[in-house]
Length: 211
Image 1 (cartoon, rainbow, N blue to C red):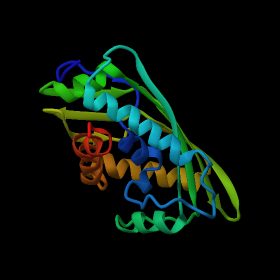
Image 2: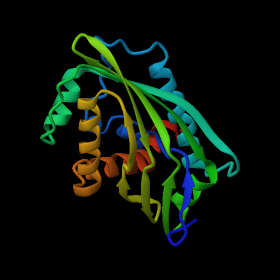
Image 3: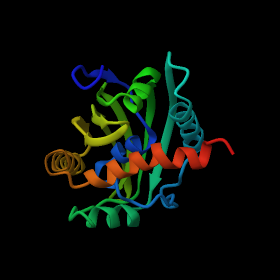
């Protein structure tokens, strides 16, 4: 399970899940969209999932079983374009709304945070999106099997590892290309690594630690 023996796992933590929902939105603002309306329970579901994950991160128990929750996120066209442009990626679509089921094996999370070296190979999981295009909504499904490498409880490297994309050819091609650029050249890598480590080692304690 440690560095010399990788174990498949479910989705690890909230920031990586959100960053991977659409690879080109890893750097966008969290401002909700108003053109493609955010779902009613979107904010509360994100907060609930974050609380569950932070409890596990901070307490390191219980060790057995799974932690599961469903989350979604809505982005405005302007914010997606801004994030994509910062990495020389063109976004010719409108708003985007995506959802994913977070599943994590408790023991894997704890081991990743406490072992000197650890590498997680995720089971394939699916992100379902609606993207505005030409006055209509296009459905996109992305299959991902990310990998994360840890050292002394901190993420050192992330691989998006997109396995399949189902959707309109132009949008599918953009997602494939961006994912390959990330895994090959690391165009979003530093931001994703920093965000994950900040969430685990700073934000969880500030937001959910003992007062």
